[in-house]
Length: 181
Image (cartoon, rainbow, N blue to C red; front, side, top):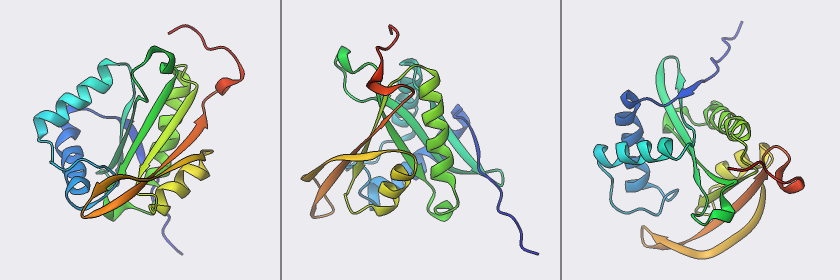
């Protein structure tokens, strides 16, 4: 008899999650290419960013596996102009030891549902490094389609990086006029 893997628990992020969120993001800044940020933000800056996301009315979620922090996701403004107010950008980071265990999928599914409930109509994924096949595949499995690849848009770790943009409608998408926001 094989053991069944526990499903990730998804919940709203709280202040106590910020050290783990900051540590995971710091790892990506230092070693990865999912973000084109070069300098690791400190805990105070990550706290300010978390508070800013919440103050703007967007969801910020964490995942736990077996009671331990496994990743985080949040939505934010795609662009600042008023006409984009129904469009959000998703961000998802998963702990290296938790990848391939359904954490990213659970976070993104919950984020999509939360954004739909808030009346948003489009979700954009901006995937740093076009060779990130796992992130592209995750988004495709959840209904995103590639709408563009910007070649050599960013530079990090001594190389030029492509950026993939993917899009997913939320609720009726652009098929009906949105409610006022």
